[in-house]
Length: 435
Image (tube, rainbow, N blue to C red; front, side):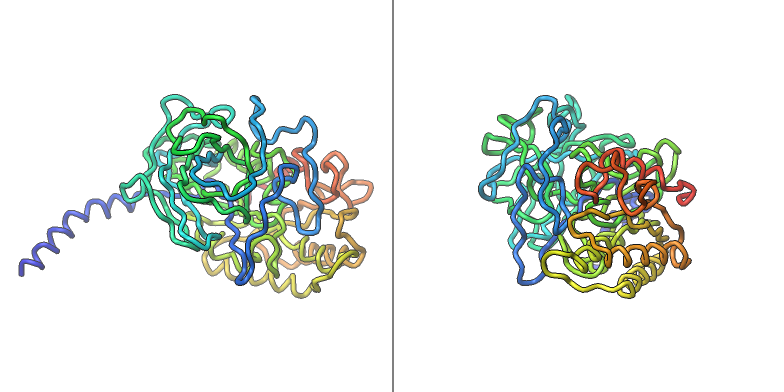
């Protein structure tokens, strides 16, 4: 009888918290996809500082363009290549949230890890220049009320909510102290790293800081939103991720789309789920779009729409004129698109099909591959299978030769847009799709 009484009291105490949680409006507001290797495969080594933010498989690393900043780095913070898995180190990650809200929470990832990942301390604050935190904005992040946490291998982990007002398109700095090792490889991005060992999470500026390409510790930022109630997830390869845009300057097409949606007072947030080298049908850099749909789309809180721009790596690798070919057919690519549409529709999610951008002249381009790209684009445009179509192809094509990129929209590789090309892609999106 006493046990029943205690259970009733506990239920009554918990009831108000449960009612309050029903008012939460958690939305995905920033994303960076973890890339665990397939069974039996170890993660690839981290790219060198001269590599672009992400390069498609089969494309040679490209040097940083003179005058193109790696990130918001007016102080010219040194860029170094880690020689081994960093340990006992403090790392700062720059993010930008797509919508405003009164609270945030962070999704950390150890999904690519084969061992426990220990976070000794985590802070978050408004971003200043060169990886600094603006005065008066720094806050401690907790996990079930504790300042540190151990994330099991192959798992994600959500932080407690942080009472922190954020505005749409605001940049934040997330600072994590890792007493153990940060395994290199997998999906990485440029981050600030303290040159002084130990816990530096409370510092306004990291001591002796450097910039390194490291595995992302944070895979998603969620906002308890006040200006939005839905999310569009952009899923694709490096063209979606933002390769060859100015690194960490938020100039990829999903970032530019977020800016347009904010200006239009839309109710949509944007989460970028692009992975350089990704494919529809096979493991590329990360699991295929079909394999990662549940985690990278359906698990995003508030997702109501998807922009799908995927398949150029399947085509390029399937018909490459040099090296081993990994066969692909137009029918298989169409079937994969249909599967994604059906699975999204089953969750009440609209799917907008993006026409594949030109690739004539790219390292793995071929006439046979062009026939498949053209065939897939024709199907996307005319099948009626999608809830809407976005013509990224025309937006980026050379008017004199629609099979190749406009020269002023591409830096060098005939495959990836530059900042101007990404702006053109974002401008090609009809915002009426998100009403």
